[in-house]
Image (cartoon, rainbow, N blue to C red; front, side, top):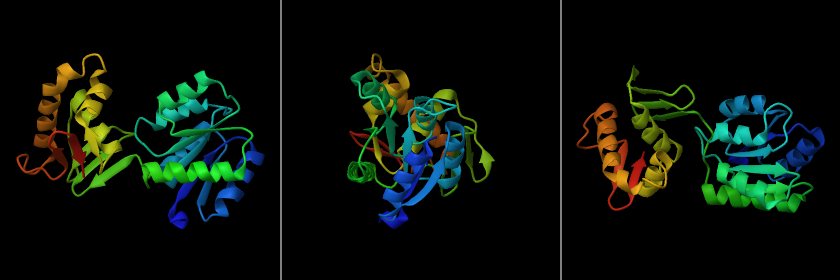
Length: 227
């Protein structure tokens, strides 16, 4: 499996990148490197990594901002490298979408163990901004949706619902999770009927037969799945 896994390292310190690269390549992982946040985000869209190792202290964009930008369109596993070991930093990283973190300095065995855990927990999710399934295409960077090559106009909320499903495509996304992500935790339960309305509206726009959907499936009593 490791020979199929692509890992992107985003770190401005060449010594750290070399250590990471040697350790990971020794286990068969395919490696790509970036020295700052902007080039890292660019390489994510080209390299389509299954895992990102991201340094918190980058020279151009803070690693936390890189993570936030990435999480707008991908759930690819991300491990943060940081010199800080305080609880507040850890909480901020995890809240922003980090899957794990490593405090510098760290050993090769710990690195490899955390990589294995991240890949095992999340699975092989490619970091790609474009989702394609049959006639449906969703570009999460350009915020464009098309069916059979024809652009589809969505409202802001319709797009938000669809993009959330795209990021976890293939998996069941619980209804309450969608509600909290879109409407917030305080009003989520009050908006459940609106979610059903938006799902129906999306089906009318992206499904050939909305009454027999092939893209957005309902998992009764649980939530929705985009396939």
